[in-house]
Image (cartoon, rainbow, N blue to C red; front, side, top):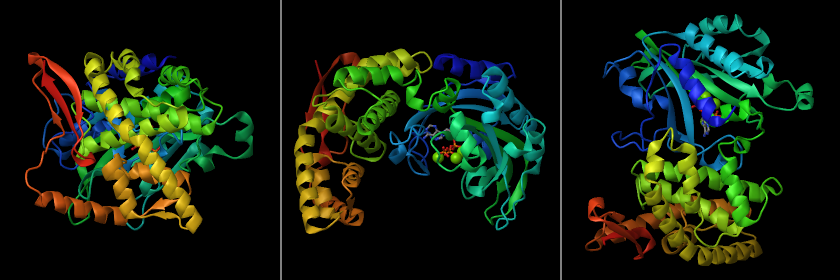
Length: 482
Ligand code: ATP
Ligand code: MG
Ligand code: MG
Ligand code: MG
C-alpha cells in the first residue's frame, strides 16, 4: 500500500466511525508561550481538554504536522542516526472529547492495524500502565482486561510511568496510556530473543507505532488526582513508522515517503545509498531536514537568529554541512528538493505546494550564505581538532566554539556534532558565558537591527536580493521592490 493510501485509509476508517476530519494545525505555534512548534496532534485541542472551550463535535481524526527538536521532545540527535525518529513527522490521530473511551479506542486501533492494514498479529505488542506506587497510581486493569480479549496475555506488557502515563503539565488533564509496538526483526532473529524484552529498549527493529492516551484524571495544584467528569481519548500514531511497517521495510527511509528524495541525492552526488554508513546518515539527515525546513517556512517561520527562527537555521545548517562533508555538495542543493516536496505532500498540505518557489528561494539563500563561511570554519575546526589531539586534550573551549558561531555561523550543536565525530566534546558552559558577554556588548551598543528579514509586500512585486552580511548575529536577508 502506498503512503498516500495509508494516510487516506486512516482518515476514512475513522470517518466510518463517525469522526470528523480536521486539517492539521500549523507546525509553527504563534500563540502559546510554552511551545514553539506543534509536537503532538493534541496541541490544537488543548483548550477542549482544559475545559476552556467546548468542541463542536465529539469525535475527530487528522494527520498533524509535528516537529520535535526543542523542549520536552527533542529527537534531533537521533535523526538520521536511527531510522525511525524524524525532526518533522506526521502524527495520525483520533480523538474523543468526552465521548467514547478505552473500549472503542482499543478495539478500533486493533481492527485498523490487523484487519484493514493487515499487519501480522504475532508481531504486535501492547503496553498498558503498570501503576506507580510513589504517586499512588494503580495499574490500568481496565485497559488490560480489554486488551486481553483480543491479544494473548503474553503480548501485553505493563509499562512504567515514563512510557505509559501522560500528563499535560504539572497540573491539568492526565491519564494512563496504552502503546502498540511492532517487532520488525527477521524470523531468525526473532527465534533468538523474545520481542517482548525489546519493547521500549531502543531496538531499531522493535518500534513504537501508536500511543493511545486515556485522559481520565485532573491533577490539582496540591498534586492530588481527581477523576474527570468527562473522559477523553487522544491517540497519536507515527505515519512514517506505520508506512514502514505496512511496506515491510527495515527503515522509515526505505518507504515511498523518503525514497524519491534519496534517489535525487544519489543522482546528484553520484553516491549510492546503503553502502557506507556515513553517506547513509548524511542522506537520511538531509531528506529528513528538508521536510522540517520546508514545512516551517510554509507556515510562516523564516530562518533567523533567534527563537523558532534559529531552530530552523540550525536544522538547515546541520543538513548543509552533512551534504558538504559526506556528499561533496559545495553549492546550494537542498532547495532543489522542493518540487518533490510539493509533489509528494501538496495534496494533504497545500501550503507547501502553493509557496514552493518562495520556500525554495529562502532555502537557497540560506544555503548560499552558510556555504560562504562553512569551508573556512571547517578548516579551522580541523586544525583545532589536530592541535587538541596532539596535546592529549579532548575539549574544545567555549571561546573557540563561540568564534566558530560568531564568525563562521556554526550553531553550537553543529560544532558539538563535529566534535563528537572526532571523539571530542565542547565546553558548552564556556560557550554560554561568551555569548552572554557578546549580548551585553550589543545591548550597550547604539542602534541595532532587530528583525532578520525585511519583506516588501508581495503585491508590489518583490525581488530576493540576498543577505547583508554584517555579522553572524545580525544577518539580514532583504527583499527589495522591483
Ligand atoms: P519514542 O518512544 O519512539 O520516542 P514517543 O513515546 O516519544 O516515541 P509519543 O509522544 O507517544 O512518542 O508520540 C506518538 C507516536 O508518534 C509514537 O508512537 C510514534 O509512532 C510517533 N513518533 C514520536 N516521535 C517521533 C519522531 N521523532 N519521529 C517519528 N515518529 C515519532
Ligand atoms: Mg520520544
Ligand atoms: Mg515511547
Ligand atoms: Mg509514546
